[in-house]
Length: 114
Length: 110
Image (tube, each protein chain N blue to C red):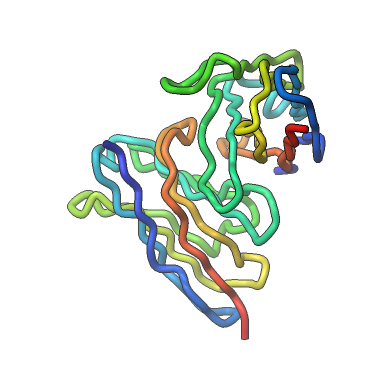
């Protein structure tokens, strides 16, 4: 059974950094397209980033240059390093598997506030 | 990376059919058959309902169907049921090798 468990969210000041983790089970992270999607409070879904099985990475314009997606094959875990955080980055962050976002985690909440 | 355009809300009575539209551009919806639809109940993670325009994942009811014409994709739900009441989002692959979501549509079952 596929399972995705996000962690690492919390309260951070504007300009601060945070690293989110997505621990996967039931499949191999490095063999799949893995995505991060976020949802600001009361708002819609926003795609954030993807890492291909080959290692290519892509980002939404809103996070390019500030966020970095990566994976640790030995831990079967996906990461999102978030730097220079802004108020508008406040959201629930989901990791999702595959090209069509077939499986989702339960999300981890990031709050950006002073 | 402008969001795809969806109606803010739609409604229907049990047993009826409704259609939710998703309008993009020739750089996303119109360019690729990589349109997906997601259902999200309050406080829950989204669930994939349709992928690649018209394909249903295993376990999704055949009351859900998808189509595309030009720059507009559509999700149709037939035989509306109370549990279909949720938010629905479309998404599309783009020519920038990124993905874009629609703004979401709140479905109310009257």
